[in-house]
Image (tube, rainbow, N blue to C red; front, side):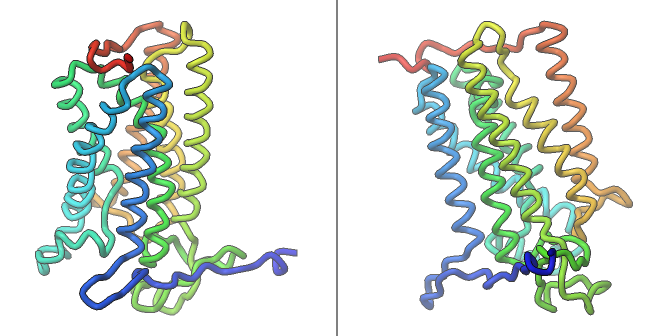
Length: 283
């Protein structure tokens, strides 16, 4: 039966359009698409929550300017031995090599500053951005597919991923098919996205029982839980000694997310949820 359902993924290559001086890469297109879709979604959610959607438009500029460099610098920091020999490639983000945890750290710092300047609750903003973030991650993961990167260990499963010889790790040079971990994470991220949207709608219906911070804490715990087991399959994990960095950060994310939910629900503590008058969706 499995043989009847068997198929294999194979990337058509990283370049979508090559017009000589103008080259459009799948990776860049997917990132740009994720940003636009995420912005529209967060503005829609803000409007439903009574927050001025234009505030999210302004925030998106801050997030892009902080998240993309953060994602790249985070990756380069843990791969410095490779980039030290070719520093000109540090800015070549279109070739791949970004880390979502770096983007989250950079984005969180930018959001903290933005929230302080605009007298808006950081947690309110984080709740509105979390669904857009995880949806963007689901979209962005397909950039790994087109670049033939971030794949897993060899496998002969029906949904195996073909990796061209130049992209294979030396220890698996004779292997052709690998786990499509980009697909696993994309599907997981979509599941987390729908969970967050359900909680958002539930929060609108049960506002008295809903607490600010719910979405961001669920995001932390749920996304990190999937990343831990998916990372265990990958062959290109960023390492800190013998520790897989993504698994360590994900473990911290799970703990922080669970503690946050305990703080706002069983313990009944509230996070700052003040929104300045100018930031409300008033007409």
